[in-house]
Image (cartoon, rainbow, N blue to C red; front, side, top):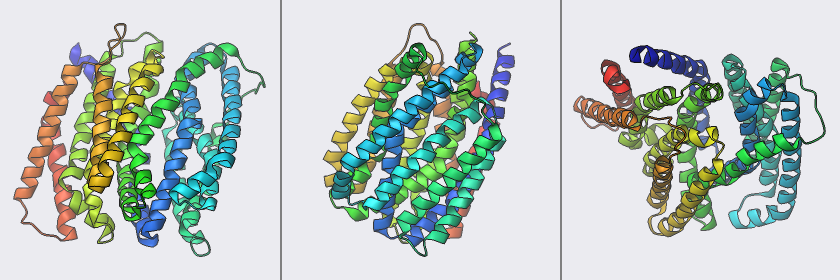
Length: 479
């Protein structure tokens, strides 16, 4: 009986995961082209400014459209069953319009301050403001694609976006500054993709220009705490670049920028696929009173088996990866790559554990914990960066993520039993051992050589050993 349940869960998880994986691999493959192109064509100062602009874009979206679109995902099934989708979406659209108005006012009031303190050109900041509109629309449309289970359309939209972004950047860079060129390319590409997806899914909604107090209250209670939660996590993951820039450590800003761009481009699309793929299934099981503990536990176990070796790869071979990606332009990036990779691993793993807050609509508890960790992170950055520079920034990020991760683990609700922690811990420990053994096997086969081809071969062999051992010991890892 147990084996039957396990097999059923893993079949659902793997099939859902694989349906979205092609799009994520395409993002990673494209990133292997785009990131070196940007690093080669843009100066260190331009890379720093670009990453600051993307950081601001992420922060504004976190505080605005992100929490609204998450409400769309969380309550879609409930209001679909109740026959109130038109009212529900009308409320979200009205909220979005109010939020955009607030964003424009904030730009008018605070743009000069940001330009002065962080040395970001005004036109770059304005283009960042423009991009917020298509990003918000795309966030909502991608949530709908998850709900409607349209992985092919999702994949196709990603491919078209990445190709058009690179093509437009190369086109515009001939007659406008590089940073402005890439941001303009992003804006146009996103508008095109938003229009295409809207046409394909044909959402037939009857818009009502009036708030429903019940729907609004439930959505805001769920979503508003996520503004502080996500802002705190944003600070943990991004504040180091702003501290470097504020202190006029422009070269460190560039190194942190390219390191973060590389890691997030390569790992975030893959790591985040699990929650992206399975969250609607977990919500549906919870709303229909199906026990979710086996499914959530198996999801986390599979996440550890697949991605602990990948996080280990960026720790064991950080120098080789830096040399392959950037040549001799950013040799110090290796200092941050391992910190960033492990931080991202725990960040996405934490999201799987934090499903409890979303199921019980107690996101205000997650907010309080994240705020505390965010404050700790700010203190660590201001203490460590002046003294240790890049290493200080990496340690501050990783320490803050680990503090946040374990605080969330220790918070439990009596009325929801959704994870078998012992089984997850066993899987994680075994996966770490497999990664370590694979590294040892690989190193025994090679004499030290600083040649790119040898580095690539070592990395490929490490990955091969990791997943071969994982297949051999799959029963011990996943049961």
